[in-house]
Length: 236
Ligand SMILES: NC(=O)c1ccc[n+]([C@@H]2O[C@H](COP(=O)([O-])OP(=O)(O)OC[C@H]3O[C@@H](n4cnc5c(N)ncnc54)[C@H](OP(=O)(O)O)[C@@H]3O)[C@@H](O)[C@H]2O)c1
Image (cartoon, protein in one colour):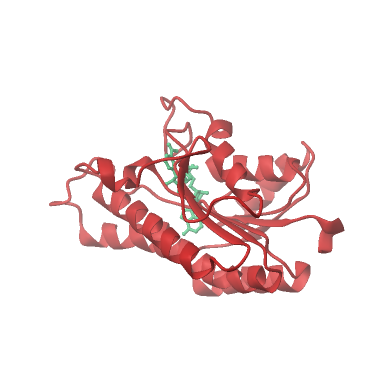
């Protein structure tokens, strides 16, 4: 393994919020962390701030909906490190808060699916070959309780549908790689104080990232194809 035998992690949408906190916890846990962000400068600033706390991190530009950007990132990881052990699909948007499914423009639903669901799929496709090469991979999809089919309710349908799709894709991907030491899981961070969650949310980013980091470090006999909250399985 490169980087003094450290595992290598890629985190999407990591310049702020739960993604940033995930990078803090992963890097301080001894994992070489690639903090990615749409805006290159925001990523650089985030790495500068986190590096002062210890941990090994670098930044890299990444827009998960732009295949050229995705391919640049995966080529960089392959060339520089030859491995990708952990992928955290954290990047997401909430564009239709409180809007009715009967009124929200279809374009908003399409844009939301493009980022929250297909963006994660783009990343899995790009980095899976590196995981297969070393027969090791931990993919963590950051979903939401709003994507639970068992409790699905009205409003914010674009966001809800995107997380339902992300959860379904998690199961399909986990099944397709089940013979390998590659685990694909999805999780709900709870309601977290970030730009998306707002200041009234009860959970800190550290609490929101805890299960992400736990899933990123699962042992070989750990679960795959599951939906988790607070390190426990939760209903689909
Ligand atoms: N906060 C909550 O209460 C909560 C609850 C349940 C689930 N979640 C999920 O947790 C994840 C992180 O949420 P958060 O609360 O940390 O949100 P946030 O503070 O709004 O951060 C979202 C991140 O995603 C990035 N992003 C958006 N579109 C992108 C794209 N096309 N390519 C790359 N990055 C992109 C943003 O980049 P820019 O800075 O460039 O916009 C930002 O870094 C999301 O998937 C969200 O759905 C959050």
